[in-house]
Length: 222
Image (cartoon, rainbow, N blue to C red; front, side, top):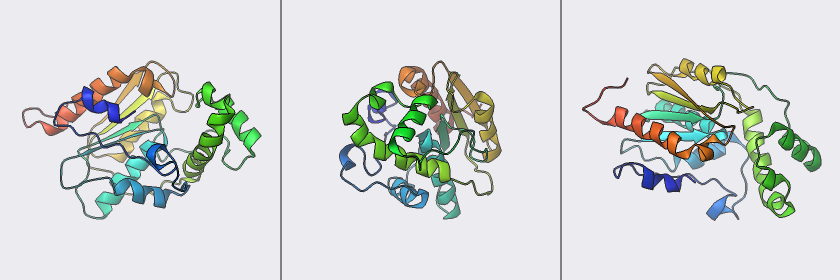
């Protein structure tokens, strides 16, 4: 999905999707369900020798945020912008009951109730055989994540959300402002948790505008 963004952004913007173990071309790689190991994987894809931004959706928002913090703590150049999509601010507590440890049938039923997984996945035994371990690993990382207080980032934060997303509301998105010394901008789109696909062009317009504002010497950040 993210690789297709290249054609919609400026030629000088290189999109580098991060593919985690157990997905896509790395389907045969062992799944990882702890944050530290996943972050090592994410950081191996970041080239701090060139200006860069980080974008993460859902659990990816936490991975992008934690990656930015780890890079800052290591004294490396931080992102020009941090895009966080479809996830509440990291210091806010979980609103839902923990489910990553449940048996498969109960886990699937809770996924259905949360309305955060496409029905076509939950209704297909073939899809479930492949994706259920991935979803469980993601939920394990997400539900065991504990925010560690630290200085705010220096880069702008852009928080994106779906107006009908049951997992995060506009107030929870706005709380990302606590985590930056720079501007924090929030944009809400029609749709639920998967607004990133249904509102792709509108999302990319925001991304393009933000990248322009933080990279062009002719423009100042609003």
